Image 1 (cartoon, rainbow, N blue to C red):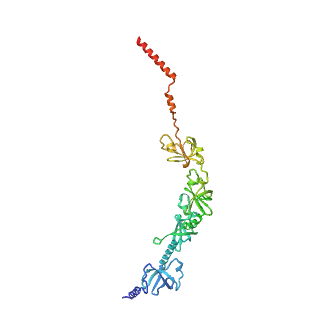
Image 2 (image 1 turned 90 degrees about the vertical axis):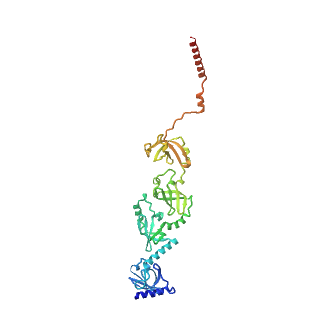
Image 3 (image 1 turned 30 degrees about the horizontal axis):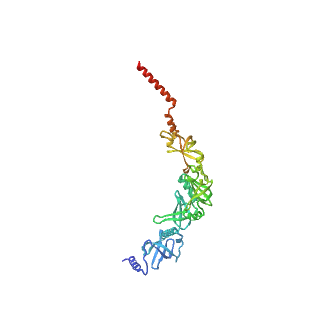
Length: 404
């Protein structure tokens, strides 16, 4: 038996007695006292029974905790081999540091703590961040509204340019996803912001009137900032009473507008601009009646018909079935956007904000009342006498001819 085998056998006997030592496993994090430390290796006393050594690549870790060790310090390390060539435990600061870092992140997530961290880089999907020496990701979807890149058309390059300005800035975030196996760390600025936002939102209620500045305009509506960084959305359907295809035709960034809070969902506030204006459809019956002939400007052409502006507030629809008596294959042959045509009002629905129009010619109908029908059948006294005289003359002539 070699000297090494003898040492291993003695160690095995010693550790088999649990009264003296609990056998660690590969991957365990254990504590030890620093015996000596140099740039090339660190030796630890493990419970007065075993010596552990950290050397080579396992010695290096970005944590400051392992940067200035001295004799007598108590430190943690991860077991990577139960015995090396010298019968010592082979340990790693690198793995221990990683484990501690991930455990710390899981603890942060479970407690929901708010951290202040720095954005280190940006890509088209969000910002790169660091917590300790673990790299994490802050997705665009988890940015606060103030930092969200509302880029027209969703141009990825413009989004990247927008996000780059946050590199180097300190951000308030919460850890929302930790997966050590996949080395995934996701943080959220929105989650940290929501906590403070909930308190701020609690002082508002549905029906409150606010005045604010348009901070962004999108295809689906406009964002309004009011009351010291509060933000609400005016959906496209709540900007004005008339039909809107592009909010940019009605509002622009920098405009100051009045609005009413119509809905609150958690930290989200929904606003309406049109509720502060009188509904023009309320008295529509005074302006337009079924059968009226009106002039209208074609605003939009759809496969199912024409959207027509009758005045600045009222828009109507001329369905494709009301454009001609003949089948319509191409609406563009009947009307062009911007053209003004004469329409007939065929329906008015104030409660639904709908007004139906038609280009079909009005068909003339003959009067066929019961009185007229009787009058057509009724014969005058003179007509009857004339018929009777003609009939008598005809009979006399017939008899005279018969005698001859």
